[in-house]
Picture 1 (tube, rainbow, N blue to C red):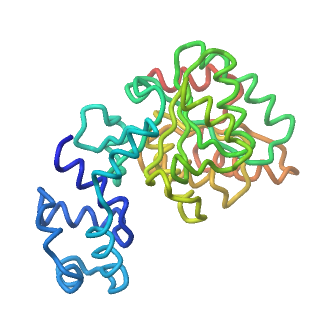
Picture 2: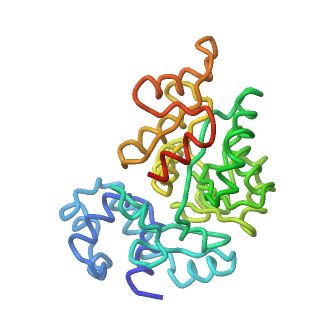
Length: 291
């Protein structure tokens, strides 16, 4: 394994170093070798790390055994890829802050998918929302598009399950490590996807789910996709965060309209009001993305 890749895997397992800090490491020393020689004071001075972060990082980087980490990844059939790997998805690579490591389990060929559509929405969909998925997705799946979603309850689960039922391809982006599936009720779905489809996470496998990680992972859902379809979402929801990040990344955003009396439609209706494409059938999506 390439030495830079080993070091990125090592650093993402350490506390105290987020995306921006690791970016600073690379800017300062592209080999990342010198980082191992810095004490906490050096880390604070060179990278403006907070004292508690510098101390935690220094401890972890000198106590976590990278060989043991890589051996465990192999044991669990988890494949790490970095922006320096040819397999790293080009769409995601060209976003503002692509993950330094993507931990992947399943069919790695899905990372090469030329046609990708994110499908997101509420965790508590109405029957109309679920029927909207049944109407919109089959022609898109049958046209060879890979469906990307977040393995959450509701719309995400429906999108993954329908895609597999129709023998299509789907990618699940987790907001936790691959060994801590959330929600737990989706563990059987995740296990199936890890064999036949693909699960990815920027978090080390043992990272438990935490609230702040889910908005972070949403940028990966949109980053992997050419477009984002939102089916039922409240205002200030995770689905709208994904849509907003998609807009920032230059993605096409599609929304299914809903009743003005339905709280689950306030977010999607607002997206349409602000320029998202109103979707009535699958051709509304396919025509826009094929341009």
